[in-house]
Amino acid sequence: MSLHQSEITESRPKPLEGLLGGIGIALSVHSLLVLNGSVLGVSAFVHRSQRGDKAAMISVVGLILGGVAVGIIGDVDTPVPHTTSLLLRKVFSGLLVGIGTKLANGCTSGHMICGLSRFSLRSLVATATFFASAVATTHFAHGNDVLGTSGSLDWTLGENQGRQFLGAILPLGTLWFAYTCSALKNDTGNSSQLVSRRIHSCANLVPNTPQSVLRYLASFLTSLAFAFSLRLGNMVDSHKVLAFLTLPLSSAFNPTLAFVAGSALPLAALLYRYARVEQPKLGGKWNIPTSTKIDCRLILGSVIFGIGWGIAGVCRTLTVDLGNSITNLYFSWPCSSQLWTFSVCWYWFRGVCGLAFVHGFRWLAC
Image (cartoon, rainbow, N blue to C red; front, side, top):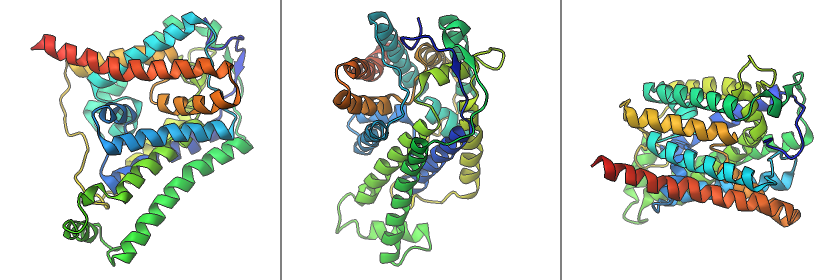
């Protein structure tokens, strides 16, 4: 069954959009790492927010509101399910993605972008595994007849895409401007170590200083920029994602996402290598995965996640899709109510059922 109600005959790759989207993704990832000492992993945000982590909750809100903004700007090709069978397929995909990301402790953002940019062998194994699983699933579940053919490269950047790029850059510019003003006000702008010492010296005056307003602002604005970057790079277009997973051997292959990875990964790696700091600029502790263990749990989780990714073509963009569906629900009821229902169901299956399965898995292992 096609992702769209009507048959898709041709999909044109968007290299410039992919390159700019990848740059926005890398800058968002690095900004959160340098300022808060945290990894921008969407699935981790979802799981941690369900455990009451306030910073993760704010990050999820930023992703959802980014989806709302994307929907307001328009020109979003998010497919709307029209049949019960397609809706069930999407919900089943969400369940697999939830289980897989919990078992593997990451998805395409946490492992592929953040992990590979830190040269993590564990993330390399996870990425190779879920990518191979997604490619096999896409060929089995969809095939060339459904995904159509890929057209010639389109290097143009439309008006709406230009707005998406500004939507990605402005939050990051605002965040760094706020940080700079705060650092200058405290006369500590030249050293992240001095910033950290000054913050902790004020701990008696302002409780929970590491969880300051600026840290919450960093969580929100980096997620907002990340959401715009995902849209700009066509990561929320499940058809382009699935067409990419068919690989160049297929006539349906769409290399847009290759351009996203081609700009995001090298830039993120260079920033991590040459623009790291000894301590997070806004205080607090580093929250970077340190495990190097490659075990059956990682492999199994990556395989399950890849299957879910290959079924629906969406993984880390769910919160963005949920925000976009809120906008569409307001402007185009009742058609978008189906997308709203799908998004809510998918979020619930991905988060709640994924956690329940993993806890059951641990109980059986004991």
